[in-house]
Amino acid sequence: MNILYYSSLCPDTMPAESKLEAEGVVYEKRDITANLTYMKEFLSLRDRELIFEKVKSQGQIGIPLLVTDTGELRLKFE
Image 1: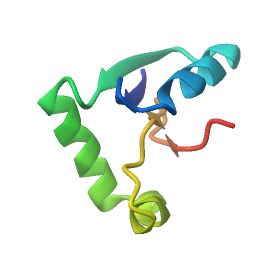
Image 2: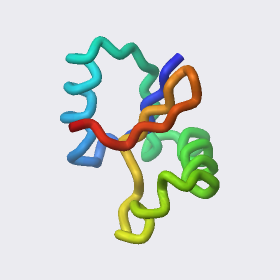
Image 3: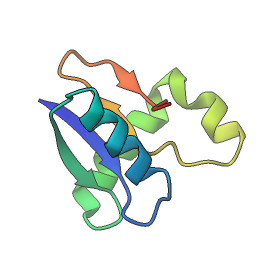
Image 4: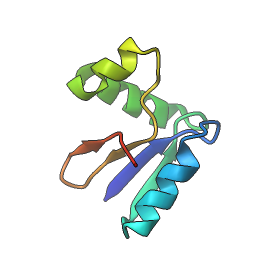
């Protein structure tokens, strides 16, 4: 199952969800600001994956993040 880590407080979430829905991507939503377990899962990924280096250097969080069922990490939803 694809997993979307997001925050209901993040302005990038709604456009990302619209893009995923237009692409027909089915996913489970995990709000990291509403659930500490989801926050810990997300931070574990963020701390060990190189894809986040640029995001972190810019002082950003790195959400929304789609983790595909094959393990691919997707940060861009343009």
